[in-house]
Length: 482
Image (cartoon, rainbow, N blue to C red):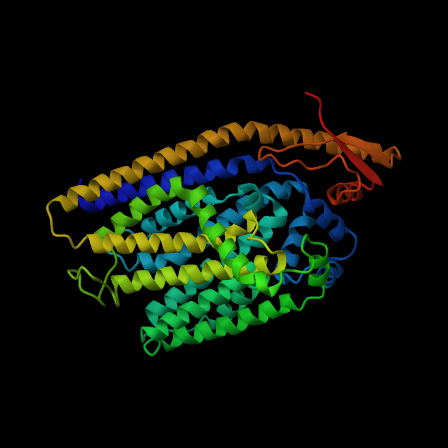
C-alpha cells in the first residue's frame, strides 16, 4: 500500500472512531426533557407575544440579546424539539468546524484535504465534548446549550473567514463577518471577553511580527471585529436586567476590587486544573496525533526552511511557543474575569464549553510545533518512532472511544426510563389540573446525569416555576420509595 493510500485509510479510521465517540456521548440526549430554567422560560414565552417576551427579558433579567431570542425560539417549540436541539447544534458545529479548518488542510501536502479536514474536525469535537466537566449542562440542557454552543459555532465561522482572508489577501465578506461577530457577541459575557481578547492578541502578534503591513485586509477585519464585539458587549453591560439578575445571585454586590487579583489568579488556575483533570486521557491520543503531524511537516512552508531545526514558517520555534503560551494565559484570565468580578468565583462548569476550545487549539498547536522541531533530528530511528507514536495514538483513541461507548450504554437505559417516567408524570399532572387540583405532591425524577428536577420545598424557585408551568399554585417533590 502506497503512502497516500495509507494516509487516507488512517484518516477514515480517525473519522469513524471520532464520529462513534460523538454519537456515544450524545445518544442519551434523545430522551431529554424540561428541567430547571426550562420551565421558567416556557412560562415567560407563553405569557405574552414573543416580542414582549424578548423586551421583558432584556429589561428585567439579562442583556444577552442573541441568547434571549434563541432560547425563546427553542422554548416556543414542542418538548420533542428539546431532544432534537442538541443534535441540530451538533450538526452546525461539525459543519462550522469543517468549513473553518478546510483552508488549512488545503495548504497541506495531503492528497485528500477534505477527508483530512473532516477527520480533524471530528476528532477535535469528540475530544472537546469528552473533556467537558458538565456535559449535560453544557450540551444537552436547553437553557445552557443555547447560550454556550452557538457562539462557538459562530467563532468557527469567523475564524474560517479570517483564514480565507489571510491566505487570499482579498476582501468581500466583511458585512457577513461583522454580522456574525455581532450575533456571537450577544450570547455570553464570558465569550464576549474571550472574543475581544482573541482579536486583540491576533492584531498584537501581527504587529510585533511585522506582518500587519503585508496583510492590510486582515487588519481591517480585525478592527471591524473589535468595534462590533465591543458594541455587543456594551449592549449587554448596560442592559437594565443585569441588575435584577445580579441582585438575585449569590453575590449581589460582586467582589471588592482588593480581592480581584487573587480571585482572578485562583479562577484561572481552576480553569487549567479542570481542563487537565477531565481531559488528560483524551489529550493523550490528541497529542500523539498532533506530534506526528508536526513531525511529518504536512503544511506547505514557503516562508521557512524545512531543514532548520529551530524555525517554523515566519517564526522561531521558541518564539511561536512563547507567543502561544502567553496568548493562552491572557485568554484564560479573560475568560475567568466576568465570573470573578460578578460572582467572586471561577466560571461555572457549564460555561467552560466556551473556554476549552481555545485551550484545545493551543494544545494542538504547541504539540504540533514540538513535533515540527523533532522532525529535524536526522536519524534512522525517526521514521520508526513516528510509526510507533501513530500506532499508540490509534490505540489510545480506540480505548477512549470504547470507554465512551461503554459509559453511554450504561446511561442510555437510565435516561430512557427517566423520560418515560417524566412523560407519565406530565400526563398525571395535566389530569390533576383538569380536575381542579391546585396543590399537589409529585415524585422527584433524576436523570442519567444525576440531575433531579424538583425539591421537597414548594417555595424553592424550581418548584415555583414547575408549578406555574402546570398552572398549579404549589407543588412539593417527594422521593420515590426504593
